[in-house]
Amino acid sequence: MDDFTISLQDLKAILLRRRWGLMLPMCAIFWLAVALAFLLPSIYRSMATILIEEQEMPVNFVQTTVTGFAEQRLQTIYQRIISTSRLLEIIKELHLYPQLQKTVVPDEIAAKMRKDIKLDFVKADIIDPKSGRPASANIAFTIDYQGKNPELTQKVASVLTSLFLEENLKERASKATSASSFLQDEANRVKDALAESDKNIADFKEKHPGELPEFLPINMQSLQGIEINNVRYAEQLRTLREREGFLQSQLASIPRQGSKNRLEELRIQLANLKSRYSDKYPDVIAVKAEIEKISAEKGSSHDELNDNPAQTALATQMASTKSEIASVGRQIAVNEQQSEKYRKLIEATPRVEETYKAMLNERENQLHKYNELMQKHMEAQVSQGLEKGQQGERFTVVEPALLPEKPIKPNRLAIIFIGIVLGIGAGVGSVALQEFNDQSIRNAEGLARATSFPVLGVIPEILHEQEKRRAKKINILEVSALVVNLGLAVMALLALRYVG
Image (cartoon, rainbow, N blue to C red; front, top):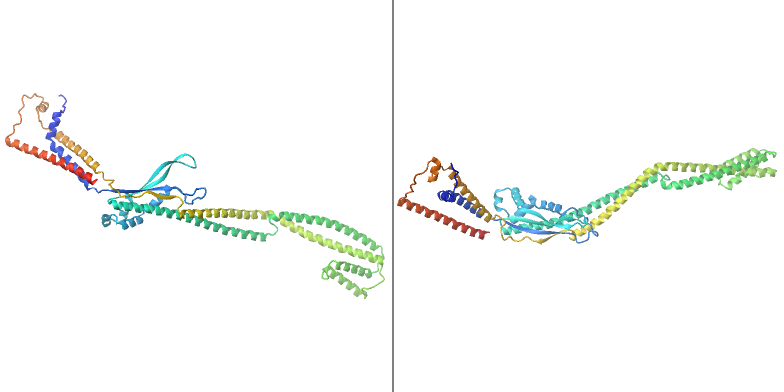
């Protein structure tokens, strides 16, 4: 059997035969699209553009305490503005979503409004002043709101813009104040710690007098001086003892006169002691007591005569020498005590030095930190004044929210066009489905293909007058319906232009 092909005549016959299968789905879908295009509410959008301006004062002169990227700060402000409580305040103030307020809980209304708000960033290619390389930076941002009422849409967009400006000023002022307060608190804390360190150092000095490292040179010098004096006193003592021995040998060669010589010797020694010390000195008191004892035993007075001049002179020199020996001995003893004292101080210095230096280092670090904090606090106060004067980084409205003149959606023309395309596709699909399921034979060629026998003749369709009139009426109705549909379609497009 030869392959079956459809000619243009066959297509024309199919379209005429299946015209209702084509027209009904196409018209139904078309008018459904038209209805959808007109029934969907118009959505308007009002948008404001806000420029991100750098601070007026050079950064080298005034360093701001508000750090972080503008995008991060804007996202933080945006999250605050679209919080449920803030959005409900705006909804209540401007009477938004009146239909939803009767049927939906407030959280869902706020969620609906949150979807209608959009934040976008405007980027630009700039040269990074630090690295000198091209980079992308946010120079501005847009905030827009979508709604059904153009006037309300503009009001909401203006309110959102004002909130962004106010929140930015509040956040920057709050951060500057917080930074200044934090630095002040830290400086006070370090100042208290510094005062405590000074007190500890003062107590440590009082507890370890003379043992501190700064006294080490003085102690060494004093010890050296004492040792030199001891050497000199030792030499002097040796000389005095030699002299004492010589005087003793001289006295031994002179005949003694008993206790009288001793009494004269004591008197000379007493006179020598009084020339140096007061009457309350222990040696003076002891010599006086011995003189009184000898005088009482002899029953003699202080002005006894018959003395040996040589013996008296030697006795006087002996008493003087012994007095000098005693004095030098006492001085050596005092020096030994001082020497021992300085040795102990010098030995204790290394043990004290470690703790003392640690305390000094801690105080030095605290002082350095305190000065650094005070410097930063002064810079923070300058930054705080910069933010209060609105001379830092700020937002400037370069394009306020305008009254929208045309809706942004729905795209009614696109909906109708899609309806036409879908209608044609549905009509063609309906015709193709009907033809595929219809096994009727409608011409001689089809009969020959079905029976494999040639067709000898064809009898044409014979219509009566009544059937002809009926067919004519049907054609008129079909043409009228087509004209009406075309007219309504043209009217719909004109109305669509007016609505748009």
